[in-house]
Length: 138
Image (cartoon, rainbow, N blue to C red; front, side):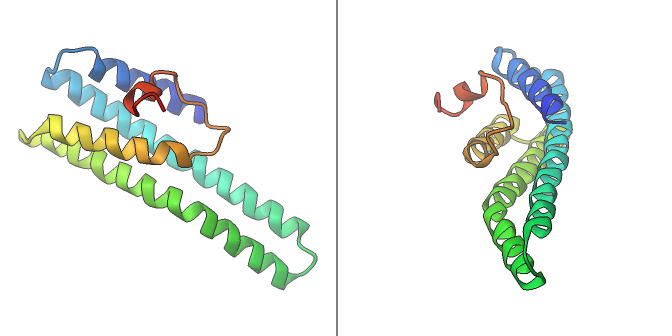
């Protein structure tokens, strides 16, 4: 799943960043981004679930397990918040393309949302090198 996100994200960046701003290219990019974001959702959900399951398995008692699971949920919350902003901005971009809105501004919002999410992602999620270009080389 993570590998699929990486490939789709690289495709989106390549399509959008290569110069032409034709609606059909942006529409394909928005569609690919939606698939990538959805795939990322599944991968992240699985990672958080595994972390919680592992904590429950290691906990010496039920009360400790509850505390550890709550700590895991709290740790993941900023990532989920940033992920939601990315989803919403991607939806706005897609609607702008469909309805003739300001697709360039909407895409910039997607970029910004991605760059806020990127540093929160687990280190096991590998992004293509070009992702650094979107986020100022970070």
